[in-house]
Length: 112
Length: 111
Image (cartoon, rainbow over all chains, first blue to last red; front, top):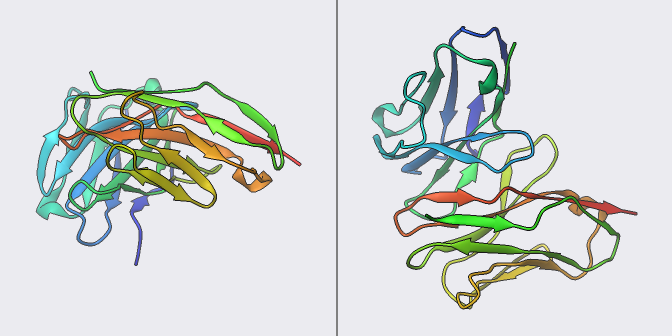
């Protein structure tokens, strides 16, 4: 069974440019998470979906970040415009209901 | 609010030494508890879990017991190997479904 797939693995962009990350969860998993992980720190939740509904987006900086999960399957996280401080690893995870979450390998974003 | 606190790293041990990484939590109700491991350049992998008080999770020689009276979920291994070198994250899932992580503890095992 395929795990959580994220793309791209690495992205380098100039500040003020837009960027998008894509996540395909494990088949059948209805809950999807986006986390941000800064170097040397634990993952911090950005947004959690149950099916296509965003049930927790309180930590998502909505002035520049947006996310969608069409049809309750794969998801896209977008930043526009990117700032230097957005450089981090963006992690996607999925779970079946409230069982354990499985993580993708992450997208490492560098803003220059 | 709900939170997880882990002992600070890095933790440096010799091969075959005993490992303890402390984790305490704050949460209302009855959270589920997890330990995840992150090897260099890789994503987080679930190591073990416990869903109710006094449950013991175990995997690959690692163990942790859900202690509600002390709000703790300490990770232990009797004899570490060089291949155990990684960053370990304690996490809790609230009854509302929120998954919260600690700051991580880096483990380095020397031959």
